[in-house]
Length: 284
Image (cartoon, rainbow, N blue to C red; front, side, top):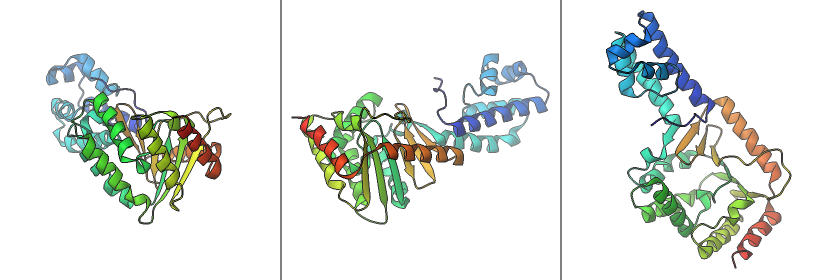
């Protein structure tokens, strides 16, 4: 199945570089696209798709292409480049096929070494400040939509346990939420009330700053996809079908500027607490 259009310029560039390298290998040995297809046992259209980066190559595609061109020595470098590109775009169904608990655990080293977290959410309460009940309800929805193994309780427990870093160590968290996140009921009203109450309590922690972007505010920056910045090293973007890792300096700078613009739209302190309390009252 063909992947959706690449949402990251760095990923797009990486894919196109691989496609161009395949084209160069073919040209260097004087083969046409049809000749490569015949030798590899493919339809000619597949060669066209691979050369234009319309379809990302699999490892087997790279091996077959290089073998057809008598360029087996190029296989290791191309496979390495392909796997680097793959790490920028990870389909949820691939990383969740062994369950949600292991996915939660896999992020612990990154969380522990990160000093500053900047999180913008237009969808749900960030995982760092989720209650167990909210996390379990949310992960249950994710498991249902993605068809992942049923280990929601264990995954929720790991998610809450790893959140100890908001109280320990030299970490700082700046969380920006669209007001709509406060109004989107996950679980049931009781679960949501508990979650919003917990959000109010963590705002008192010295390492945590929470800003709410009020609904209806005139704005130049539109609501964006939910993303997390880990120091100045990487950005994790969560889509419905995949996780995107952004590391290109130009893209990191763009996300940093977007975060600053969102922060200018947000209210903090008493005004933010007022919006959260209003959302709790609306659950009655």
